Image 1 (cartoon, helix red, strand yellow):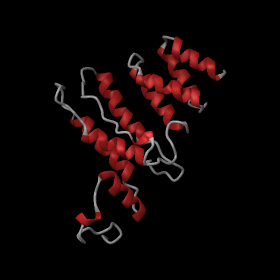
Image 2 (tube, rainbow, N blue to C red; image 1 turned 120 degrees about the horizontal axis):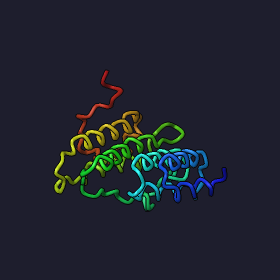
Image 3 (cartoon, helix red, strand yellow; image 1 turned 60 degrees about the horizontal axis):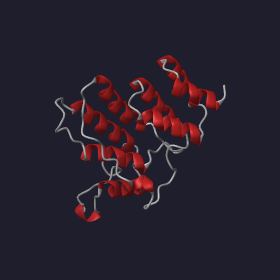
Length: 186
């Protein structure tokens, strides 16, 4: 089938299985049009949450969903401040947690997570607001910490450490010789 047929099926068909089939087919057709339609599926909450999760998974595999290098004045450096938590129903909780885990799969050709993902995980932790929520967000925070850790764990060289210090706002003067790099601790 052609790309536009899958897009029509995704938008017009009310059958969840047909939508799932369309998303999986569009995953193999990484174009800008497909990427923008998959972004729309992710953002519209009327879609079944499993379809939204599959759309995020398909976006991860396309090359148009994130830039290879981010410049300092790029729109990609905008903070991802989340809405206050409202875990009133299971699909919202499931989608929020799966979104974090799927962002973890975004990797470059060297199997490194882009700094945009690191900043996204950090923003989810820093700006997490559970004040209006009647349910605990402990599992969500644990998933966020686990995803952030998995995206950062492989960074061992000095250049990557400098990147981490920029992300977390750590200055070298705070260390004052007390910090030992991972290579020295064995």
